[in-house]
Image (tube, rainbow over all chains, first blue to last red):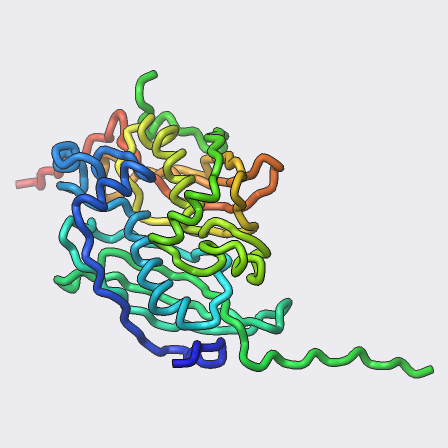
Length: 160
Length: 160
């Protein structure tokens, strides 16, 4: 399969990535390194928290999702990075043993005004468990190279 | 120091967290696990990319920032998690050897309508390097327990 260019992304199109199972060990290892709060590190403390039991750091879910997208989306396209993230919502806890699937939709795309060699593709991602519960949503743009950058107009000559 | 409650956060107040140095080894290790794109994994490929050299995954910067905030902010307060992230902007590449400092500002706070035992504190974080360049900004809310939850009014008795 040739890699996709910006022109190949269609507004409204859907795709699915995953599943990816999440283990108790990796939840605790990620939290120990990047989010050492009791509800992500310790079953007993987690039961007393509003999460009601051990759950992954929301940032852990983000980076697991990013891994699935890097493999299935970014590295299958002429991706050029991203300027940021528009919004993340952590809706329900991700538990040890959950299997995450990403449901992706292309919201819209637009050419770059300042960089004619690329364009933006705005995605909405819904992350669901094996029980079809939505645990997280993510809106973010991706920068993708264009197959045929428009020619810049040559500067007009002024009348002598 | 006693842990801070929601009442102790003041709109407009400033704080600083860090610094935290970022190594080449951890940039590549994080990317291998969570963001395996060439510009985060390989110096040669990175030089050919729009980043112009090896740079940390934007998600890596997010979770390094979260670690500093967990240590300095969340675990020093009666923090109860977060509902999501309002916005992330990746403005410049984070390079091996960069030392990151977080400049935090409380934008606003509000009580929770549905959960009187807590409130929201909305933060803006600016992540700067040793050269005072802003590499990332982050807007996100934090949920914090209240010291004195307001009493719910008892239901009014109707006239007999």
